[in-house]
Amino acid sequence: MPLRKQGPDTEKALRLMEECQSETGDEGFRARAEKLLNIFQSDLFQALLDIQEFYEVTVCESRLVGRPRTPVL
Image 1: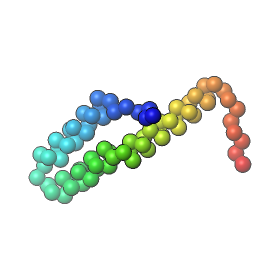
Image 2: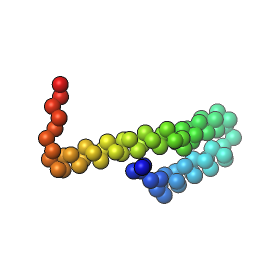
Image 3: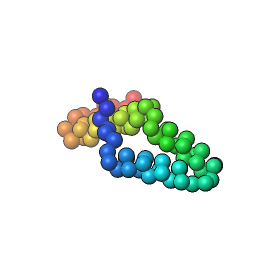
């Protein structure tokens, strides 16, 4: 179950990027913007964001609860 939900800021940023990409006459910029949009909208990228958020939440919870840290070998 994903922890991160796409909020209004993310949706707005993607929408603005799509508008900018469609309005430019520079084909090189348009191709790079399209590639970047495809990456941001991919399932893999979203999964990586979920993993990062899960890790951050887990680390914060372990510090707040005061669990003993696992010794580094």
